[in-house]
Length: 389
Image (tube, rainbow, N blue to C red; front, top):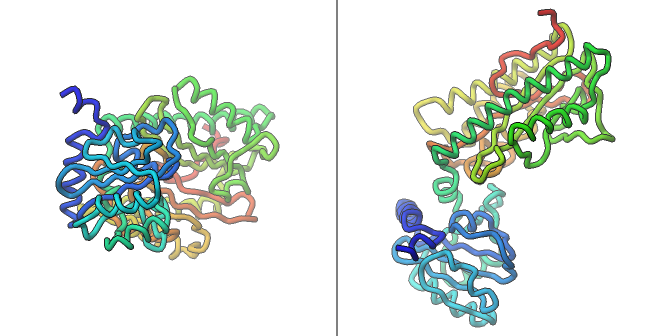
């Protein structure tokens, strides 16, 4: 019993993986790592990401039976958290011999490989390693569906952490917008960077930790989907400005899932007709995607993208919607599950219950000054922050 508790890959998790393998009619799931190149493998196998991993290791989870491991003599402990038999190699000749023995009798295995690199988040195994496995007589297929089924579903506790993070971020969005409005009223408009510092102070109090900053974009900067303000490049959020806020961050606790919200505001008394019109198109696109997700069937990521993209294309702005509709959210803001994408990639995987993802269509109009907008969840119009109460 004590030994079972120490295993990183618990029996229940192993049974779940093998059940999924059998359902997909696969002989096994072959994991490979070199210098921690495959973080998906570490998560699925429950391995600690600490310590030196300078040599290649291989781990086979067969559809039936116990796992088989192949590790280097310099790092024999690399897969200690996984149950099963272990073979050790030092030379490449021994590696090839032992790898062939490990895979003997198998015909089709999944690896973190994506044909044509259609789903780049899955492309963790190099082409040479895929060639090596194929040279041993096996068919290698993508693990994309396995990763979606094993990695992306969230526990009730994880879903609760995501909901709490989203709730706090929603308040932060409005607080930053109101701070920008206050500064305009006081005759001392804030820069994007000053608003970022205001946000960071709130996050410190709320226990939120940022993975990579926050998008606080004014006017022309709002046409850059990944714009991050710095002290030197910062623009002023003045009267008549469009203000786009895009916040993504988890609570500062192990296993917390990030929230990810975007909203658009106008620092003036009345929103210009063109800004409101384009924003309305984006909101309609978001709602079309939401209706599909909320339907009785589980749509593919490509179908969700198509629902949103069709609205924007029909309105004549298809060429200005320059990214996918949304991404999976897991332990990282950009997770490894199903993305809402039939634009940058073709994600034909179906969404699964208890998973989390974003829906964030946008219209980007470089050079058009104050009409760049990017739709955010929960909005039906762009608020005018300086309008009279």
